[in-house]
Each structure stands twice: as structure tokens, then as C-alpha cells.
Image 1 (tube, rainbow, N blue to C red):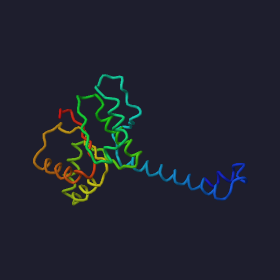
Image 2 (spheres, one colour; image 1 turned 60 degrees about the horizontal axis):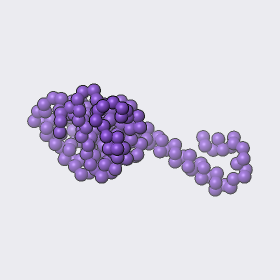
Image 3 (cartoon, rainbow, N blue to C red; image 1 turned 180 degrees about the vertical axis):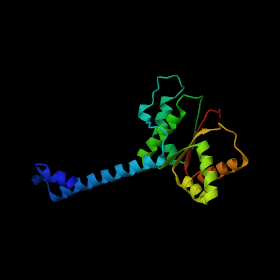
Image 4 (cartoon, rainbow, N blue to C red; image 1 turned 30 degrees about the horizontal axis):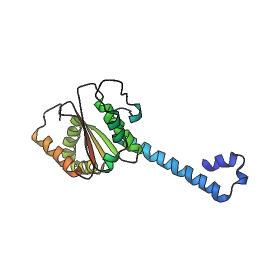
Length: 184
């Protein structure tokens, strides 16, 4: 496509072959990176579309604009730190989590959004059909794992064990973002 565009553009006769080749290579690199980013976003399965640039700081939710800006640079993900977002229903915890995940995907990190209740359903089914270890492995490899709505239901022994396995596999290696209505 880029070659076709070059052929239809005027003024390229003045450019050296190497310059035209560099333009083609730059275009191909940009197309591939865009495709990879779209794939990361699709695989993240974000609950809602959000971006850190669209966060509204006018509402009295207690958001610290400078803290959000620091988190948006994704250094905490590079350093394998974790993040907990707490607050009452309707203040935008899930939106913030999705916004941070979207930014992480734009920065080249993989992400996966999971509601905690759905996580435990998936793990239970995976134990039944033999995918359990594979599922745990995929969670362990994801750069940013989002566990949304943690603590809405009391966890049974099996669920506590599953959560421990997931967090243990990720500890110090990958980042986890947890949202909850429960205070820390």
C-alpha cells in the first residue's frame, strides 16, 4: 500500500532510492505496531473503553491528578508493582482499571481484564476439562492482570487457593491491578 502511494505521489523522482526505501520501512513498522497494539487490546478483553487522557478529575472522587499521571507512565508495570483501587460503587474503579490497561497496551504490555466472579467460574470449568494449568500459565505470563470487583462474595477454600496460585506465580514478575469496594 505504501509503495502504491509512493508511485502515485509526485516529487519522488528527487528522492534517492535509500530515502524512498526508508519511507516504506517506516510505514511498514508503523502498520505492524498498530496491528500488534490492536491485538493486545482485543486480547485484554476490557470491560469498557477508557483512556487515562479522558479521566474526568472534576468529580469529587478523591483522585490525585499527579498520581494518575505517574501511574499512566506504566513504570509501575515495568517494575512489576501492583495497584489496588478501592472506593464505593459507581466512582469509576473499573473505568480507571480499563484506562490503565489501555495505556499499558499502547505502551507494549499485555493485559487481561477479569471480573473476579468470572475468574473463579473459568478456573472451575478449566479444572473440569483439563485446562487449569494452561489457564494459570496464561495468567502468569500476562504483564498486567486486572481483577475487578474483588471481595463482593466471600471466597471458599478452593477459590482462595486458586487466587494464591495466581498471585504467587505473578509476585515480583508481573503486575496485578485489583479493584474493590472493600477498604484496604
